[in-house]
Figure 1 (cartoon, rainbow, N blue to C red):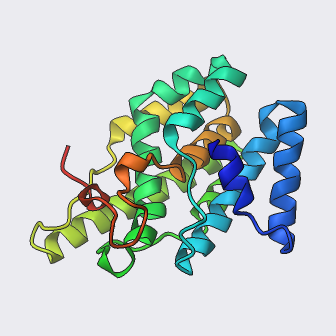
Figure 2: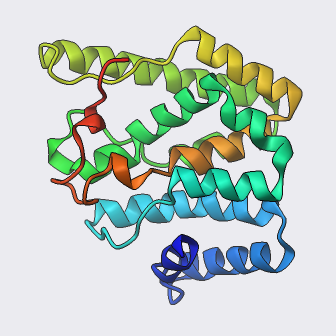
Length: 213
């Protein structure tokens, strides 16, 4: 069971790990999503730190299982998960965090540390959240084009478009900044195994630098 494996990799002797496990227990006992989303934000930092230290036994959740879990607990969230803009922004988060961490020195793209927490800090108010998200997307596109130019087209990844941000703004209006942000962090730090080869820095697939699409 994927959740059991992920939770088992958390070190409960560290205060950060203990807090994470408590949130996960709250989620399991109550079967509501608030503590799970808090867990996902904390786990994004925990995962980033572990991968930075080459502790590859700490793994991301898979997108497939994340989608299945959320659809089961709260089907009303399905339109968010099916939105193309939402998926593209979550993918940009992934390509700024988990993917370059797996590729290590092979990745031409930098790691955006603390991105999940940065987004959550601004999720209380719609305008603040849209601004921090727009800033991230601008930086992401800027880096994508710079690296593409520097590597003479060898390193590519999909750009985030105006249409994507418009999609996300519509979702924020329909749900809330906090709901959309929670889901972006949950999915932005999740990754399907088929995308990541054998989950080592050298085994990550060529998709890690992004095929054009």
